[in-house]
Length: 131
Image (cartoon, rainbow, N blue to C red; front, side, top):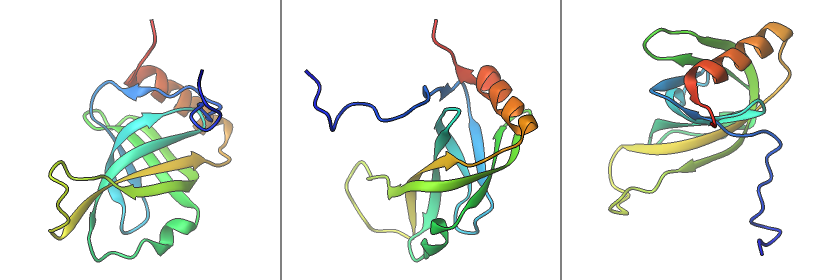
């Protein structure tokens, strides 16, 4: 039997990208990243950060653009807040180097009907759907 702590807490089903799908965060440290998963309620993406960068700006609301890398089709200007931002461990567990791979999870804020429509189409067109 599954424990209460391990049970899924999300309200929306997660979808995984078919191919390289990008996320562009207008925060100066984050910049562009690779989408890991997405739902109607939020998304997760990985990005590269300089090791000396200050992540304090991630406590403020962010604007996120999502786009399929080849065609550039996507959704622009989705307001979101950071739910988590964590370093992705290196396979060799080393901590040296000037850059860190991070995974950021965001919750989408309010968006207009057109952004909602674009998000639905983005999920339909660029993610793996259940059969």
